[in-house]
Length: 80
Image 1: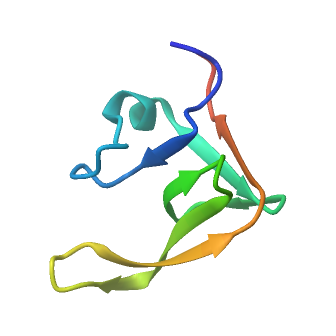
Image 2: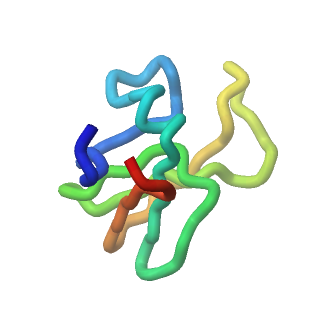
C-alpha cells in the first residue's frame, strides 16, 4: 500500500470509487482545514466533498448528502 490516499474515494459499496481495504485502514479528510467525520465521498483534483446530512436517508436507504467545494486534504489515520 502507498502512504498517499487516492484522488477519489467513496464509502458507498456500489460506487466504482469504493475501496474497502483503504476504508478499513482508515482515511481521514480535512475540508478547508477542518477535520470532517461525515464524509461519504471526496475528490481532491476536482476539490469537493460529499457530506452526509444528519441521520436522514433517501428512498434507497443511503444517507442524504450535500456536495461542498473547497480544499480537500485526505490522510491515513494510522501507519501502514
